[in-house]
Amino acid sequence: MMKLSFIAFLTICVLLVSLPVFAQEPGQRVLHRGCWGEDVFWCQRKLMDLGLMSQATGRFGPETEAAVKRFQELYGLAVDGIVGPLTFQALNSIETVQIQYYTVQSGDSLYSIAKKFGTTMEELVNLNNLTHTTLQIGQRLMVPAGPQPLVYVVKPGDNLYTIARRFDVTVEAIAKLNNLKNPSLIKPGQELMIPRPNAS
Image 1 (cartoon, rainbow, N blue to C red):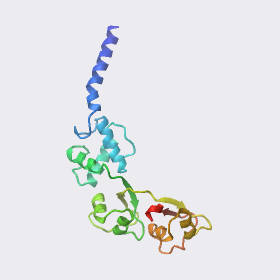
Image 2 (image 1 turned 30 degrees about the vertical axis):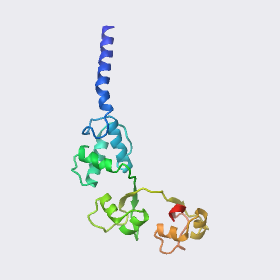
Image 3 (image 1 turned 135 degrees about the vertical axis):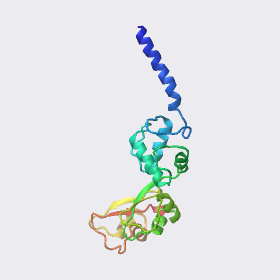
Image 4 (image 1 turned 90 degrees about the vertical axis):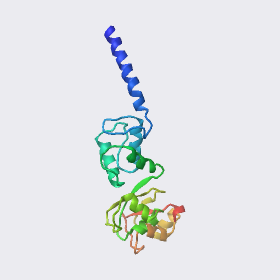
């Protein structure tokens, strides 16, 4: 009986000691591998918004460390995998900015991508830590997330006019979003991005 009481006492002590750690507000301590708590969860959610992590667990493990290093690399910070004041400040600065990824297609330029996503070339350069403005087909860029375009798979008998009418947008808007040089040359099975009506 004495042994059980002692174990219960130890358990309560451990919980009381660890509870303040779990309840830490973001930015109050330096986070590294082995840490856990609400502040770790907050950082993981930020990294997930950037597409650098797949889940938030509240525990700072190898996946979190790798994601922090990638974030630090992208933002020109010292790459140590530790969330110190500078890394926290950078994470906090993107609090209201939602990010998505865009794959560079044939005919794309930094200017056309910026225009497509309602941002500036300078923001894209800073967001992706680009050292030059030459893009490669297939390159993935981080862009500010806005209203997501719909994806439509072309069916037999479709043409750009009927698709545009179906989604209440213009042929020009679809052609522009998909970099179509000849809008009449679409084929069944092809995926087209359809802009939201208020974005056309």
